[in-house]
Image (cartoon, rainbow, N blue to C red; front, side, top):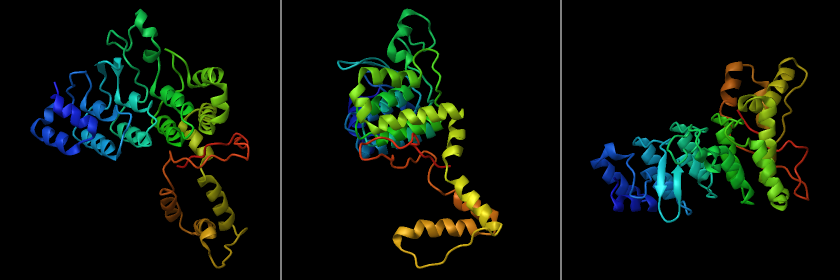
Length: 301
């Protein structure tokens, strides 16, 4: 069992204290505290996550902390099973999407459900009907967006989960579309006023229609537009227009440069650095905060 002082240091995001203890006991990185939480869960199961907690989470993962460890929490505030990814997907923290990225990079399963009270996530006993057991990190991220009007970070969490292979099918419970519809029925005004919730709805619908996250990215990525422009340029239908550049036209000059390059290898190398695939543009809305034409989320590959 983790000493109480070390568990408290993890809660506070005290990297120095936790790291020093792990230097002496590296094999105990996945032990749990008295309340049943691992060091990683103690670190991020905090309603006031700061930079220090993000740094400690990264350090713990680098030391072998299991991002899929299922902990049975038993304290005054909660009782039941919890995993790091599931918990952080319910958090409003601006650091949530960074922690999600760290967990997924370390091998967190985006489709891991919480175990029921028997400790077996695939058990068919009565307790498996519990909402938490039948939920997924993706569903919790969608529900969290609705409760946060500044939900751009949580929208990025949804995108990261989808990129990592989060399934849109949930045989044990509600699908993402059903979860969204349920939230719209229960909280109609919140759903109407939350542009990030509407963006997430459109994103889910788009990925479902495309068949996969990768196919959705291909349809939304600007690379196709640049390659089409490049094809026209290489065939002589368009030429680069030279004029004095200003800060407002830098991007136009960059596109013209790429479209007119003669070396395909150089072009592909440049495009490979064009933003992260889960990087989401600002959502286009009109004066009434309504989404334009349903084309809400644009992603990059």
